[in-house]
Length: 223
Image (cartoon, rainbow, N blue to C red; front, top):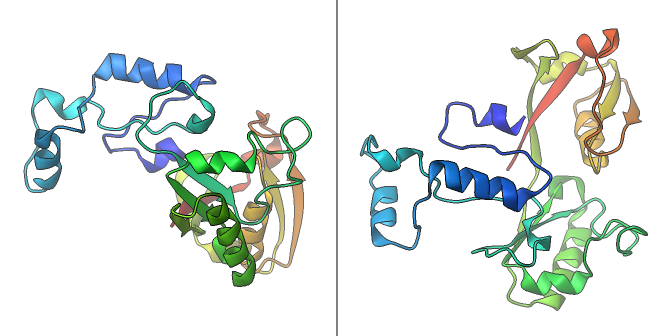
């Protein structure tokens, strides 16, 4: 879905279990632009300039999912995403809970973004922000939300169906993501008659069936 959203742009999307190795492969293949040079920023600010030189395909920034846990990886910025609906789970580390590191690791972060903020009462959000900044007082905390734009059919991703397509209907939320509660709540806000749920483990490879071939997929963007 990310690749589809970025289609037609200069962004390159890599998929691999070893994020650092995948990013390294892209840097080796396409080369990279040194973002510390003045020339880079001059080029960035020249919005009217059409880029046709040999550097146009080079990578200016690499964004790694789950990169913070790669301790040996050199990085410029650590952005931590916190699910506002279930921020810390049972406060236990893997395999007894969802946390990959103790909360004290937030001291290494440069930015925290609390997403699904629109689905969480403001007092809870403020308590969550305070708890984060108790760990690192200077840590900037931002809030984001998922915005549903339209549905598209499984067999044709170019089809755009209005969000009202599920209004007053019985809906089955089928997912294979780490935390499906935000997805379900977003669908519930669209006004279906009833919402049922069927969730598989994260990244589970769903096999095509007659029902999945005729289903609708929800397109969302984070803001």
